[in-house]
Length: 395
Image (cartoon, rainbow, N blue to C red; front, side):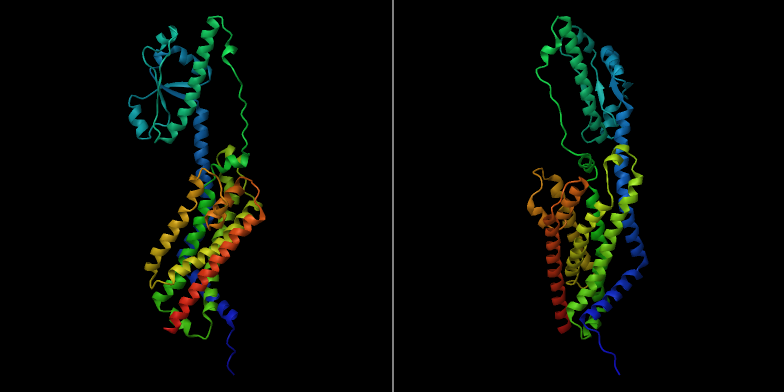
């Protein structure tokens, strides 16, 4: 008595097990994928905290590099009273600034500086830095504030010498109020966290999507599968489920890696402001899992048209480039968020994950809209793949 053939869903489950077994068989690719997913969180947070800690260390060093400080004893006295250490600039400071070997701006004092101050004339200083040198450019604004303080002190002394009340020059007081929350300020540094997670999901699905479509066509193992009396959509469903599970596994590992990754934060300021807990991880997963399914289907739709993995890699590379460029719109667009951004896959996830890191509220419809778009994209791509498979079976 012959066994009863499995139904469409049973056939899809068989294909799923087969594709997962094939994906897990490539141990080297799997190990690289898993390690990169786990390393995303700690590596990104360590790099960001190293950058912030470096900036904090330079701010705490309170060093001013001056060329010709012997011409300005009053300025030297002011800087020392502000607890800054005055160091002579190297002779080749311009070349070092251009080559990024010097991380501090240089203040150049002319020989007639003190004479101009004595006669009540404007004294000139030259602040030398390179805008292509981020460390020196960051220190330039701090040094400018110091010089403004010195200029105000000299102006007040001149007014007091002439018997004029210094308050006469102070026409108004300005109180600053920063509306950004600590989480929003921390998000300025962690803006790349969602981007790295998005790329991890994309490349997590890449290998499996190409292998299960173009790879099988190249090996000649796809045609025997189509001989079985099973609907094409069942085969496609099983293949897609395997690819999507791999991509979703990468998304899960990437989110989880940020929980212990916070232990590597070197900057106390960033550690106090950055908060990524279970709630934030759950929202990230709610955004990334549907996108992982949609990207898996989209890459399968691209690869099913190709007869070799090498040919499919060209289309997948173009897709990866497009996905990586979409989030750049939110980084460089100074007009703020627009409703249409939530209807664009990848851009919607980047936008909402950024709001999660800023501890901003997200309306339910703002979560449902990207989910609906991903479901529509996924179903459209899977229908296209099934139609291509039916055509290959008839041929």
